[in-house]
Amino acid sequence: MCLVTGGAQGIGWEVTRLLASAGAHVYVADICDDNLHEARRRLADCPGGDRVRLARVDVTDQGQVQDWTAQALEGHGHIDVLVNNAAFVRWQDFHESNAPDALLMMRTGYDAMVHTVAAVLPPMRYQRSGHIVNMGSSVSRVRGRGPAAAYTATKAAVEAFTEVTRLELAGHGIQVTLVRPGLVAGTDFFRRHVPSDRLPRFADHLPPCTPEQVAVAIGRALAKGTDTVDIPGWLPLSYGAYQMSPRAFRWLAALGGPARRDFGHPPTPHPRQAGQPQPQPQLQASPTTRTTT
Image (cartoon, rainbow, N blue to C red; front, side, top):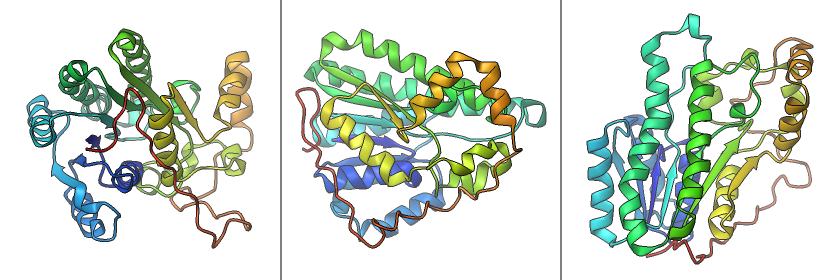
């Protein structure tokens, strides 16, 4: 049985679809009524959609999180996978925004993760198995002009928490994975929250990925027990360049001005891939992860 926060749209929805199609029972928490309504509509055409349970949950509220996880545990007796994907985004310079929004970003991205992890650890430790996936970001590794300070701080906190809890839980049969997406085109993140001019010009020439590709990468991490997922695959190159000389990296990033590409639309498929069905990953249960009930 799997739990997914922020699972009614974007990356979270694609993770929900992937897990359900692999045979898992999936409990989805989301706070947006419009996203929940649309997700319910799409369940009819989703393989395994009858195994998906959608709920309106404010993941910043510890009581609501505890009630949600308790219902899932009562229904199935175990919790195998937790995917923390919920986020609140205000992509502005701090002096242009306000403190409540900055704090809500941390509450939704970090505090909520703490609430959900605290809720699933007792059953996972009892069964000595489970897999926790936390959604970080490439901005925690490359810090330049453009990303919002509060969002960057939130993702840096998520990364630190994930890496240390992985060490703490190593002897309990529980796997902890950090996912660091970079440019993910075709989601509300860019359609509604992040204008292109907040990105450097060279972003126009880098291949982005799709929510489906991020979900497939998460599925592979669940099957293989991967510690860290960076997607797209070129991200580690940018991390290395930044670590060698942060000042030079920022200077190069400023060349050419802001990006002009519309990342709110999905990337155009490669001509050789257009019109061809994409292979679907098969989730396989590992010694520390069960994906079906």
